[in-house]
Image (cartoon, rainbow, N blue to C red; front, side):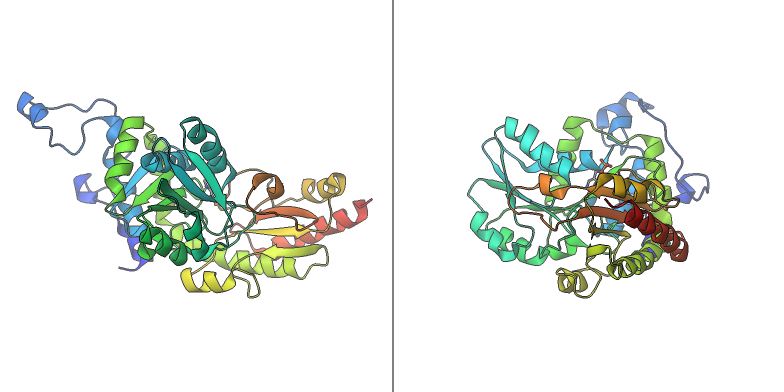
Length: 385
Ligand SMILES: *Cc1c(COP(=O)(O)O)cnc(C)c1O
């Protein structure tokens, strides 16, 4: 089955739910056993709310179909999915390799809590490719990837990193939030675990926090065991919103692919824009890798504006009518946010000059978005010192 069909059908069991198209929201802590023999046999699929219900199984099955995974574990946020995955592989005295371009809170966890537990986090150049092999040590527990990188959008050579990892028996995991699991299939390239902030494209409407951990056969029991030990379960209403979002994900992602490229091309030709970071644009340093490994691009990309004056930037951003300013992305609406990636790395430098911004392009008509930004650039130019 093709992805668009899977997204519509996977995980649905109408005739187990009185014919309802969607699996209902099971609000459950206690799950009752009808007889002592039933209780003693312990072979029921659902035994306690924290461990899963038909509501969670539906989303797990659908995400497994999307990511071509053996099994999926849900988490109450994207960050919880990241930390559950890391905790599934690390050992005291171990070593973890993380891309320097990774999502900043992932970095904070690795350099914070993991360091406290005696696990060393080492950051590598996102463009390292098969050069990763020289950083692998006998105590390396995991290699963490994210492509394109958060805020800076470098493309990683996933197959090259996986090949080096496999040579040394090191498991690999990836933050696959940008592609939604729709435009990129890390498990088919040999990655063991694909994590998503489902908060972004799976939920798709900026109204719930959720994480997904899609695992191959070897990784699934490890991740499931960590999940069960930690008790970090996602709430039923948020899981339902995730499933509801996932059903329309294909149309949203394809439109956001188109809209994102239109906006990135328009920005590239603006005199105020020094650089656009969007791997689907020919000429982007990651374009060849993107073309090889991905089937599309989401609506999230970066650009650099030739202005560091906060007041002038404020004049531009504060007056935008269609772009919200705030964390997260992946919803139906457009966003814009300045960032300072130079403060978030250690193995590489980010010094493009100007101010780095991140744009998330939603489902609006791009002619309206362009009008809004044109007026914004005019305000920027008249407010420059
Ligand atoms: C947002 C995000 C996360 C964390 O997701 P939350 O649901 O906000 O906890 C993880 N990775 C990436 C790449 C993200 O953009």
